[in-house]
Image (cartoon, rainbow, N blue to C red):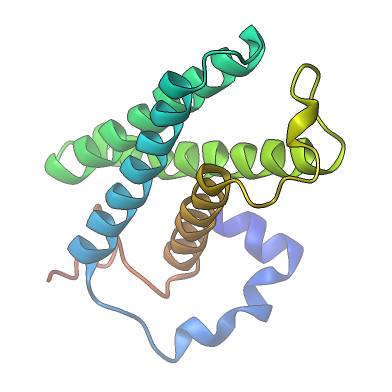
Length: 164
């Protein structure tokens, strides 16, 4: 991912991380886990409390919840082990968490602007609290992952071997 930042030139735009960094890998990782678990809880609450939604939306919510649980498990396994393969898997779990978060934000924005089939009542409804909470948690996770990628924060498993 760092190569992508370098190739696109974003790395130079966010080069402020060279001047300061937060040396709290455990706090960063626990924050990520809290954000993803909160995201999962909102998805599951929406899944179990809204019965009259189309089947594709129910499958979408279940897929988001399952993928975020997989991301949580991958981050925890990558953090708890010293095995190199599982540590790389922990880094890939961060990417999975960001992908799930971005997909959720994209569908939320699309459902509020263009609308979804069978869910026309969502168009223009920006005041739906679970949707707003989902966007906030997803955005915070993506921002945290971006800060880890740029080196502003260090997460476990860390490459710099900093410890809390």
